Image 1 (spheres, rainbow, N blue to C red):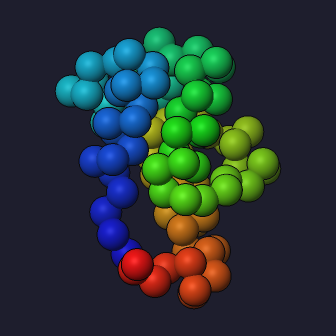
Image 2: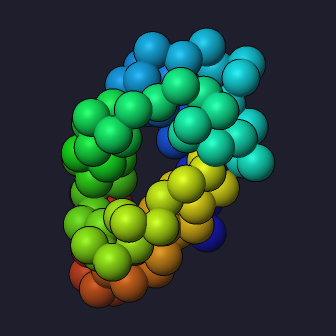
Length: 87
């Protein structure tokens, strides 16, 4: 499975206007000063960037950057095989 962390860090940085150097897997959104609107924006951007749909029940548990990484990986793993082909 591809390492999604650098792209996720970049998306969070842009959507929440947080310096990339502060975004570590263990960092919470509260610690980063990311409000709920910025979190929603992050989710939309992540879904677009990775061509996934994140499960609603996963969204409520997103508290840290690692939670986001795990949710994206889970969504990528759940995609049907035909979606994974390179065009």
